[in-house]
Image 1 (cartoon, rainbow, N blue to C red):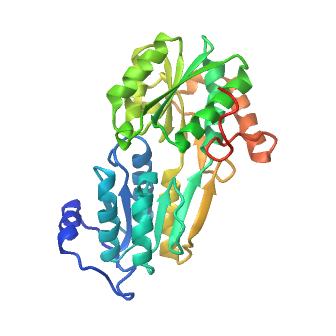
Image 2: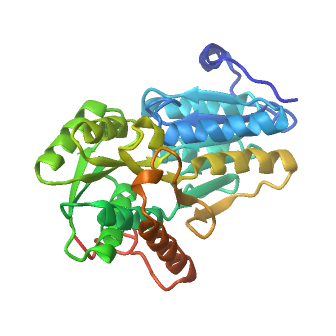
Length: 337
């Protein structure tokens, strides 16, 4: 039977939960999600996960449990507590849960776990990763076509391989449209706090605008809200990521590259409910519908028919294999700077 417990109950069970559960107890409580730092309403990565969980609840009528960590140190406790209480699958949002999940999963072999954006090898873990460089290539192309100065910006969150991969795809896409395009790349920091610092994101954005950037993408989680705000205030166009952020500043966000974390969460929950959940590594790119870019009433006036056609052609070329986007996380340093 599925049931949902309030956050305060989750906190209390950190103290009161038993050390282990029997095989018979496992998978009785329903699914759960553990968000990354920044909270489920970060307007970006976590919020996409929340929407996927909410869609599952709306479609099935089955509730789910959730927990928002304030620091990576809480990850181990949250994952273990949900497993102790019989929740399954437990979906961990973000690479920062990897170490904790690697410790917890072997202790609960009858519990299904999933992690987004990192690979954890265990027989009861599904790892969902994305070819971010493919989506960022397409929006990089759009950015270069929209730019009047020929200078673009990229503001990342924590300086990690995933974000470098994202930046490299963006540069490659921009250069496909304008070989002379200049791309400024800034990272917010080297710790998880880099995902939750909109003031710093705004500061980096203003600096890029001063250097001539007139289209700036954010790949920075909650920090990206400050990037988009500063871009709108400074007369530049922003590009959102993870969630559809076009509506945050209508007419001032060129597009949003969605990373379908919502689909990943929904599919894990639904697969477990249907009895078809399997462990292993799942890689999602443009071909699998794991990435896309958004055109809606908030940005339609910014996307010309020529731009839309060019983006569609680029996507088709990537899916068909005619264009191979460099993966800076596995294939070495970005070949373009």
